[in-house]
Every structure is written in C-alpha cells, then in structure tokens.
Image (cartoon, rainbow, N blue to C red; front, top):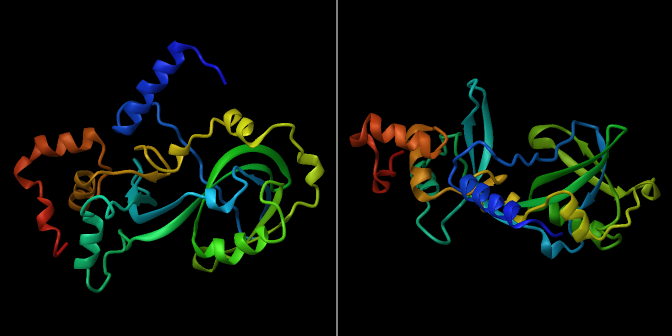
Length: 246
C-alpha cells in the first residue's frame, strides 16, 4: 500500500508521541470479549500458531478519570532489566497486594469479528488469553481444521470459570473474502505494535522508572503525571532499591 511522504512523516511523529505517552492521538485497539453464552464468527489474522504473539506480563489495577477501577497488563522487563514489579511481588510474601500480579505468560490473538450476537461486523480486535487456551483449544482445533477459515467461538461462564469453544463456522461461505491475509491486515490498519511496543499498545510497555512511579503512586505513569509529581515533592520519589517491603 503506497502512501505519500507527508503522511509517512506524520505517522512517524504520531508513533513517537504515543511511545512517550504524549499527545492525544492514541490508537485505541479494542480487545475481543463476549458475554456468557454468546457466540461470534471470527477470522484470525494469522494462519500458523507459531505466529501468535506471546508476552510475559503483570496485571495491574488502574483507575479511570471517573475513579472507576479497571485492570490492564504491562510487559515484564525481567529479561532486559531488573523488573520493579517482580521485585515488589517477591517482597509481598503473603500475596496481599491485589493491585499487582506475579508475572505470567499471555497470548494475544489478533482477529477480525465477522459476526457477533447475530449482527455482522468487520471489527479488528485483540484477544488476550492464557497459554492454557492454546493447549486446550487452539492446538486441538488446528490439528483438524484450518485457522485461516471463519471460526465460531462461544463463551461459557464468567470470571475465573470462563471457557471458550471453537468450531468451524457453519455459514463460512457468507464470509468468503477475495483478499490475502496481508491485504486484510492492511485494510484493518493492523500493526504488530498494537500488541506490545508502544505506550498505548494493548500490553503496556513501561520502563523501570514508570513501574517505580506506579508502585509509589498507583497512578498512570504518563510524562505529565511523573513531571507533576517530581515538581510537587521531588524528595519523596522512591529509589528502585527501596522496593522491598512494598
């Protein structure tokens, strides 16, 4: 897909701004979800399980502007640096801090929703699942059927008791496309960094300093928030070596 030089330069600027938590042009990639007993017809944006992104993450509790709590996932940085979140959980001997989880492996499945709740769609979304979803659902399915064809997926249960089942779509002919997988990705504006690598990726990419800021304040570590905190009371900023006992 050819673009103008002007558009390409603009994209670079937006990408750098997003990576630094600046500006307002954030890319909001919705995550895939169903209600209990709900079925959707989807198409995965990969044809080989080896292409599924797997990320080691920590789940943390955040708050919306209205004060409503929600959970999001942040990439663990233990492979490249000392991870403040890992250090904090080591110090949390009795696992009493429910605002931060231990590191765990997560799959992020890029897909397009073709139909949901009886209504046709064409929505690009990301589906986060534990590795057990691969061993229990995707692997058995891909041994018998193609992952590139339309798939019916059904949710059963809620919260920790949630399970998903996959079957070949009964009405697959209704969703036939004359586009290659790469062409479909381009049409949907798919970007691998939607999964991880940017400040506004579905899996947040934070530095050790940003993790420290969250541990000390429980606030979103945007540059604006971190600068405001330093200007407010620079002497209260905790060094990373003081995590133990958090």
